[in-house]
Image (tube, rainbow over all chains, first blue to last red; front, side):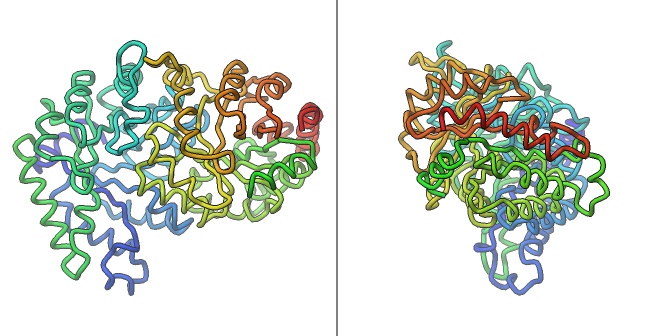
Amino acid sequence: MTRAELLAQIRAKHSCLCVGLDTDIQKIPKHLLKEKNPILAFNKAIIDATKDYCVAYKPNLAFYEVLGARGWEILEETLAYIPATHFTIADAKRGDIGNTSKMYAKTFFETYNFDSVTIAPYMGSDSVQPFLEFEGKWAILLALTSNTGALDFERLKLENDSFLYQEVVEKAQQWGTPENLMYVVGATAPDALKDIRKLAPEHFFLIPGVGAQGGDLEEVMEAATNKDVGVLVNASRSILYASNGADFQEKAAEEAKVMVEVMKRWC
Amino acid sequence: MTRAELLAQIRAKHSCLCVGLDTDIQKIPKHLLKEKNPILAFNKAIIDATKDYCVAYKPNLAFYEVLGARGWEILEETLAYIPATHFTIADAKRGDIGNTSKMYAKTFFETYNFDSVTIAPYMGSDSVQPFLEFEGKWAILLALTSNTGALDFERLKLENDSFLYQEVVEKAQQWGTPENLMYVVGATAPDALKDIRKLAPEHFFLIPGVGAQGGDLEEVMEAATNKDVGVLVNASRSILYASNGADFQEKAAEEAKVMVEVMKRWC
């Protein structure tokens, strides 16, 4: 999906909501366990309930891989169910030497037809580059994440007085364009959102950490949006598990709607 | 597998060779393409040819994921074929927020029964910790990799005058022990091998980059071994694709044997 197509969808829906599909069999409503494929049934129900409110879906690969080969089939079936209008993100945090990253890029962009994949920057340029070479596909590079471990390395001060996450963004600005590269910036640090927005004024940010992880949506929108909206705000657990009863679809939709009510001022 | 079991195997074989199973259908001998499952047939043939020389096998996940769900079945069948005596490494470069890393740990240690998995450190402690909580299982953390991109971030100088890769090792020394944590250190930088050995005198290193990537084996052994050998040296392409004719098993075995001839002085 191109940047223009993504933006058109955001403007049409007045939403930049991404729903994270971190589907955990332990957490889905008990009545779904009698389905032949409970995880797929849950994903389809969540997609039905939220597709009018969100512009993107983000399956978290760990939750599918843990099921073995069957998990990858469920992932494929889930992907097939997501409307073609919606931007898709493989939240996979991949990254390896060039010839291996190329295989990962083929995995997510060709074997599966994801629009984008999240990438860890540690191994540098040749680990990221292969993801930038597919027409209409995107690399979403970790800059500053929403977890406590972000303090260990991402927020280290470098000799040149930058933080590591700033250096990641500054270098990556030379690798990709606003048409094929986004950054992951956690909602839990609005100061850093502003700061990274200065370094990358045009690029989209994928922002996790609103909801279950404690980030404040209004503050995030204020700090991170740009003239083309420029953000996808993810919510996973707060929408998926808004209820674990028979009303889980209704509650998921309500939760999504509440977020969009806040977002629309900026979208 | 425990450290004592791994070391016993190294001492018995006088080898610390790890064979990387980066199996690419484009590169395997053409006569195997008529097999029902050419990649599995190739992996089994390579395992047969090299198992007396090596102590570990390291499937590179990208080469299986690119095949979709079928690739994970091939991975599982390959793993089942590796003798129980051999240490197994899922070269997966995973790492995410705590609840997601926990799912990845379950994937590789429970769904599949790997002994270890490679981890990217960027997201910090809570992204690594879940891999350290399984009895007899190992996290293998990226410290300094063998690719050119290592210059971008891993070799950045920090405010405290350390390189980032040194800080990664220093912090991780507090998270894991020589019984559950190894480091990836590329063969292409013998200076860094010595340096990381000082920071982590007891820990095993997984050393890629000998062979196709240009690292010198003797120099690596000299720089990185400790009193308990303390290294697993990986070779992938130089062994797998030593020949693409009918003699590929013979040539792979020869290549492995040549490496072990060098290694035995230290093993």
